[in-house]
Amino acid sequence: MGRVSTGLLGGAELPEPTAADEDWRYVACAPLAAATDAARTVPPAELRPWFGDDAAIVLVDGQARPPGPGDWPAGLAASISDLTGPTVGDPALGWPWRQGARQRLTVTRDPGRPLRLVCVATGGRSGGAVELELAPGVQADLAIVHVHLGAARAHTGGTIRLGRGARLRVSEIQATPVPGVLTTGWTAQVGQDAGLVWHLAATGGGLVRHRIDVDLAQTGSEFGLHAALAVRGTDQAHLVSRILHRHASPSRQLVKCLLDDAARTSFDGLIAMVPGADGSDADLQHRSLVRSPKARADSRPQLDIRADEVKAAHGATIGQLDPEEVRYLRMRGLDPAAAATLLGTAYLEEVLAAIPHAGVAAIARDRLKP
Amino acid sequence: MTLAITNLHARVGDEATGKALLNGIDLVVKPGEVHAIMGPNGAGKSTLAKVLAGHDAYAVTAGGATLGGADLLALEPHERVHAGLFVGFQYPVEVPGVVNGEFLRLAYNARAKARNQPEVAAKDWAPKLAEYIRQAEAPEDFAGRGLNAGLSGGQRKRNEILQMVVLDPLVAVLDETDSGLDIDAIKAVARGINAWRRADRSVVLITHFQRLLDLVQPDRVHVLVGGRLVESGGPELSARLEREGYGRWGA
View 1 (tube, each protein chain N blue to C red):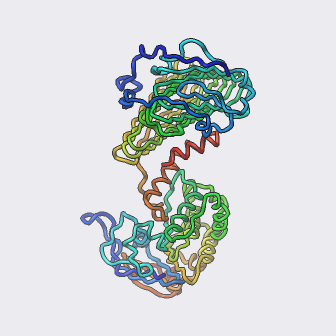
View 2 (view 1 turned 90 degrees about the horizontal axis):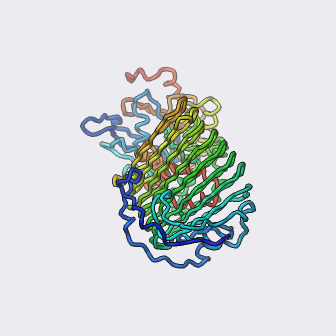
View 3 (view 1 turned 120 degrees about the vertical axis):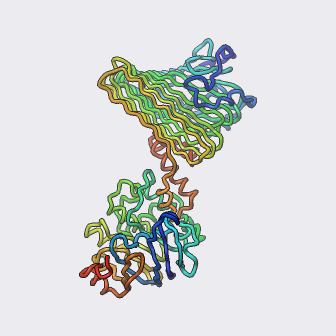
């Protein structure tokens, strides 16, 4: 792993997002101005639970740390390098941070085991970015684990490029509560006959917002999104997706939100099919299960179709627990709380069961337990 | 444990616009007994089952029911299960996303906890459930199936019997468990019920048909018409009903 560049550049010139911004319209932005804890040094042992003895790309408050003691996946070992120059305040990633690093990874052959990106935030304002490129035909899994050890304002994101026929499965989870702010912003370009599947499990926090922009750039490019947002208390979690079909290509998105107490969630998804995307097939479904009258779920599925002979479906439902189901479970011996928990678990399981990385799925199930 | 129903009246809906469906039912089911309740459509048979289970769409307006001497109707629905009552429904509810095996473990543990008995960890549940499935003569794949979701009508009834076996009640009220079943399935369900029976366990079978009663021999047969039990007798009564129907009661 090469040298890491960090700095305090640029961010001050970029404007802060506000709810007046179109794709921040559902976000309560006050936490952006809240004080953060001071960043602190994290002993390696404190990080170990999140990647064990496996090697991982570890960003602590935006700065790369030495990986764990294990070997790097063979196809990745010689490919990591740093980008030099300004590393912060990249408008393409959404909003500015004050400290951060950018890593570039090129995967030239199947790694044989999942790549891990562990993003740790202890305090302050920080950001980390990754440029990931899969060579043609390469298949890989990437686990992204967000760990907040203090009230921080942290951003992680970057770019992903998939060569022809490459396949990438991403499992992104929030492993801890987020007392401060967590935002992500990923931009992916999917090559011909290549496929990107993104699994996301989040429990929200003071402000948690994920954004993914996907360019289905060639014929046969595929994208899938399976997201579960389970939020309680006064926490909030938001998801924005922008899927651009430029040639005949399929995309599938299923986003499920489970809300308790005074939680807030939103999903703002756009499917765009430009001229030339004839024959594309897109489906976007957003479902919210609201278990408290004080919770608020917003949904904004959008289609922008400018191609012919396409299929594009979208749907959004916001509902409550089915009283018939609750009643039936109670008549089988479950008390009301146990019945609600079982139904909430079952509701999310459709998304969680699809997470390909068992360890990550286990963390997600534990964190999202209704 | 005796189930005693006394002058039970119940309605569906609110006081102003609701409809009275049970109009004074008296019934005593002692340990080890099998009672059959027969009657025409709309007589109140399923209402009786739901009222005993604690369905909140129904309001008891007079009378009462006790289980082992305790006021059954004062208990919450889940507490009635813990007290030893099981009601198998005519139309079991589909619960999409819930896996049958995990649901059964949670239901088992809820009952065990109420009884101050040890709960079963997830890792130890599979062999225990396999034994219950064998006892209930349910299909082996029921552990991994959805909770009634994706099951045929007949499979759901067999799943109700499996639930009954897992929950180990002392009184089981089975509402038209035989409807929608083919001949082989009725026989399997009957074997499941008979295998479950014990001197301290009693069954109330609500049914339209003699066939189930040929396989699960009742001690008493009751005719329910207009929300009342209008006649009671031995097993011969069901055979007479099969021949004559319910016309003599104006149904």
